Length: 271
Image 1 (cartoon, rainbow, N blue to C red):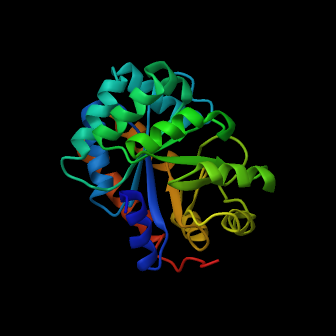
Image 2 (cartoon, rainbow, N blue to C red; image 1 turned 90 degrees about the vertical axis):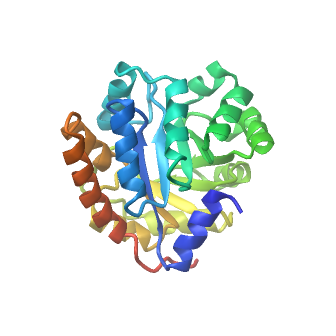
Image 3 (cartoon, one colour; image 1 turned 30 degrees about the vertical axis):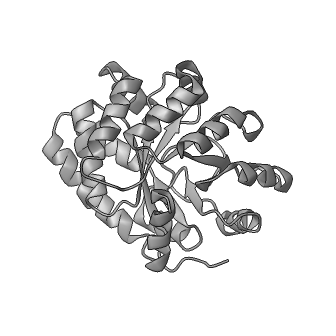
């Protein structure tokens, strides 16, 4: 059983949703990013979603755009992102999912990119701008190298297209809770239970919900229905606030992460 599958099994056995934390790799620099990842992984995060810095992150709001910019300005490259993953693997076996864009995959060669990421210790890939109709090469590389694939379902996705998306995914389905880009929101969408039900009627894969979830109350709301909950911008904002104070950054991340993780300890809908 893969690390990703084990993470969901453990969470379900504990009658809770998996907590998925997003950080941009190398924000604001490699060493601080490593310290931030360590804090998250030592304080209850089930899956680490690492954003691969990109100059045109079209699915991201301002918070994550600026995080990618900081990472790139600090000298992050694909080689250094892989170095970060390898260093994480020295102390943690928590599954890591790349949050990336197809330009980065294609520019490095699809098979080479997937092989290098898997060798470093990455378990899955969510390629934001890659539709399932165009994902054959990535899917083939994933099967060859043991890399799980993750695809997005949006609130506007029709049923027929959900069928096509779930047929391509192997790791989990990422449900985008609202239209638009990533970022903190005051409220979560009200149609999440119905949307998750539509997806689960078509697949046995876990359904993870992200985009716009930032508070313990919002995490708790989503955790009642989803197999996993993603928090990103709220954590990235802490790094933005304390980029040069690693001790305070780690303290704040520990406090916030522990609180947010507590919001996932709720019965998961079995439908």
